[in-house]
Image (cartoon, rainbow, N blue to C red; front, side):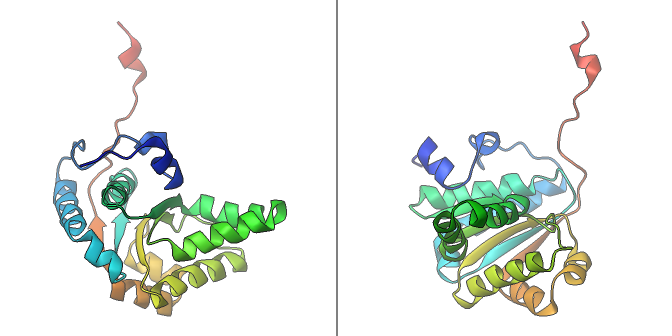
Length: 201
């Protein structure tokens, strides 16, 4: 497999923390290993899935490697010559809010990319401030347009199915269910906790 260069990573929104991750470098224990196998199986037919607008919803608690695995999928797709974008939900909304005030052309370009890129990875759906009416409207608009145009989305979220249904419209959730494989992550966090005692000799 040909490696992705730094320019490609930046263009895809993949920053330093995820620059070196891949399915080959992951160290996964427990139930997450089975989820990782399912997601890796998805990547074997990634071109077919992207062409048909079929994505993934990776749902579960913090620290269960959902984001890492989503990035691995995107990197596999880019390695095969595809184009995509990874973006945290909070950054997506912040960019849409602030760019319009700074530079309308930049704002239009960014929003067009959200709607048109072949593979859009939205990290932490539900992490946005949904108290502002325009936020939910924008989420619905972007996802609905991608659904209508068979544009693939991979979503990570800390919400379970019920929380998703309580936050977003039934119509939107129904569309996501019909075009995305839902994979639940129920394992404890895999993140290593830093311990001050590790610094002591």
